[in-house]
Length: 371
Image (tube, rainbow, N blue to C red; front, side):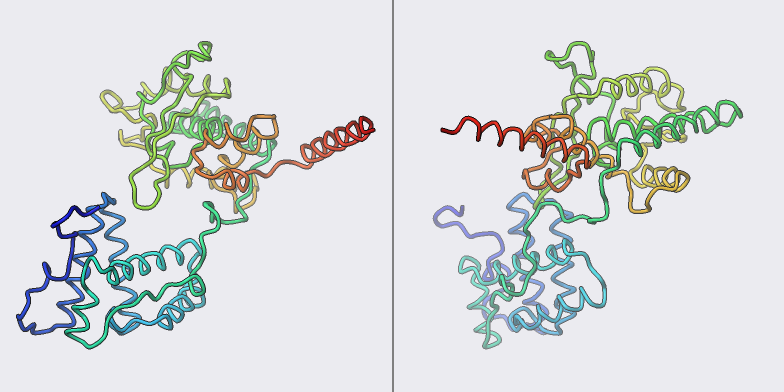
């Protein structure tokens, strides 16, 4: 909130000097608008990367329309959206993000706090208007807008993946190949993604200090709780932290074995805080995890739509199937909305049949109790 007598960040009169004739007024005013918008967003403590991407979107839209913001119309937005879909095949989430950037820029320009409407009227005889409306932009109905083909992996597929990954370790050891440490690391990475329901980036950014004792589960030692420090960000904010309770003891055993017996054998590991190290002593990156997963997936003949994120879907699905409270699962995976957790869930036919049978039994019992 702006206090009495204070100017909001980026008002027109502070970015353009009254009475001064501009050599290229259209370009100068446009750049001043962008500078003011950047200031306003910095004042809201948004991430620099988010601000930069939004400004780039505005520049791209300006280039596409061939007009400055004070001459934009809803038709320009319609044509741009059509091009993004028909020619470039952009995903719905990407289009919604682009439209959101233009909407927020228009909100900034049309706000009376920043005086851009009056400035444009004075200089160009017209003024900016909001061009993004419910009827010409993509609605954000769900938090998850990923590929619908990315289904949860079945328990049999997950077991086959883990068995294959373990076999690669044994093969490397038997043949005396130097890749044994890396194969062991990768096998443990996949088990950790599934065992705690993590995203690729979240597992990649784990440090050796991100594990704590859980007084409710002392038998798990120092691995009773995991701190995820790089959870998915939202609306330009920084990474969201969360604490995940360990609920799969076998996954704890696997991770502890790696940290105690395998990680110390990597070169350059001394003084490095990353859980997953590369041969050169760096941090294992999400892209490398995805590539190794694809190699194993293809060797097993699995669907090409399966990616490491499907292990996270499986974590949600299997906990639900095993009777875990959905609210607890939602907290574990860091979903803001229960609807997202529901989308992640792809319970088996056996589970659905069991639930149906229980529902029918309850219904029949209730009818028997009716007068």
